[in-house]
Picture 1 (cartoon, rainbow, N blue to C red):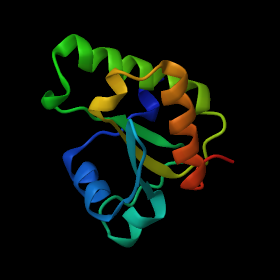
Picture 2 (picture 1 turned 60 degrees about the vertical axis):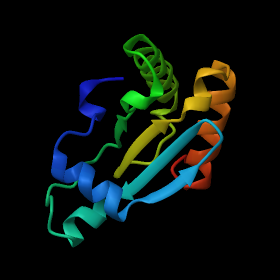
Picture 3 (picture 1 turned 90 degrees about the vertical axis):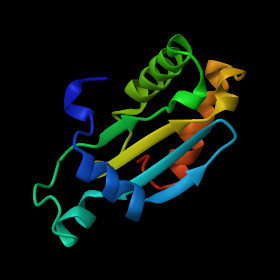
Amino acid sequence: MQRAYSIKGRKIFQTIYKFGERKNGQSVRIITLPDKKFSDLQIDSRVSPKVKIAIVINKKYGKAWERNKAKRRVRAICSGFLKELQDGFYIVINPKNESKRVSYQKIESELKFLLKKSGLIK
């Protein structure tokens, strides 16, 4: 996944967590927020033509190698979905502890299901 697709800035993250729509799966949680919401809240007037994605894992997840492995898996899954995703959205993906014990294919299917449920896959 390219750097152009990443979310940067504390204020943007706070807004996504405060106003975003949450969808929970067994091993993954996503928070989505349309780009238009930022201009409505007068936080960021720039409207991004692309989708912006962040993968967030806290230290409770496990050791550094476990967190890095989870991020690599989710990043690989997201790079496959980028062409299908609807533009103009901010997405925060949060793998849960259960994702350690789940296969790559299960995480991929669950993430795709959550993105479809949110209406982000075209």
